[in-house]
Length: 274
Image (cartoon, rainbow, N blue to C red; front, side, top):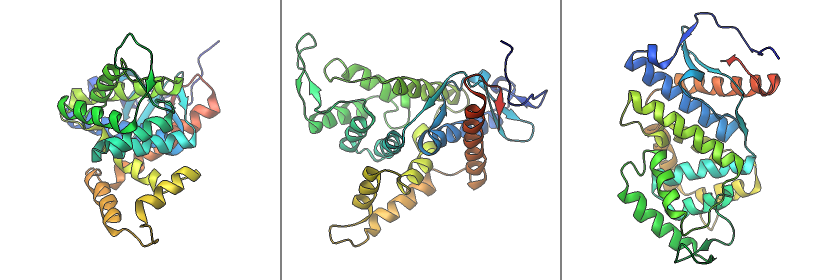
């Protein structure tokens, strides 16, 4: 069948290879913003954001191309991913294990084996968190590169039973692809810091009972008084992770919503969206 397009864009944008370093950095930040907003807010994610599928428009906006590979994410998974992003930056390894369980990446009960050729038995979240901490603290880029986490989990998978639902595979691919693009324009790019504002936003607007309970536990003490230390921490995280200003966030959210709506309207084959 003939290709379908959402909008024809003749000479209206450039790919990464045609951008200056400053322009490439801006486009990369917008792409990570847009994909993360899709992941934790809209639930419909462009899962193939390689260099040929994103452009910086002459109007300064981010454009996605080709919606042949999309991933739909349920509300509880969106909240778990948002929580996991915060856990990595906070070095909350026990919380990260909880996020793994919530996404279905690790089962319940957690399973572990001493010998890679032996049978899986019962494992504890505390032991898994301790091993995560040791490995993440020793690997280069442990709290700044998604690729480092992927490497750690691949090695741990020999002894800890992990699962790979289709959406997990697509999302890993998505963030590894974006991180590879980012590395070309900024070797010190921290994908978690760029993603954090959207993770905080999702955490503050839960749509599931588990998310609401997590928010109450994070912000309220046992006597239902507000934990101002935690509130201040969330504010500081938001300010730290948004150095590019509010306008870029607004543009990225628009790109995320536009890509989601356009892909949903056009089906699995797509053209470009803003």
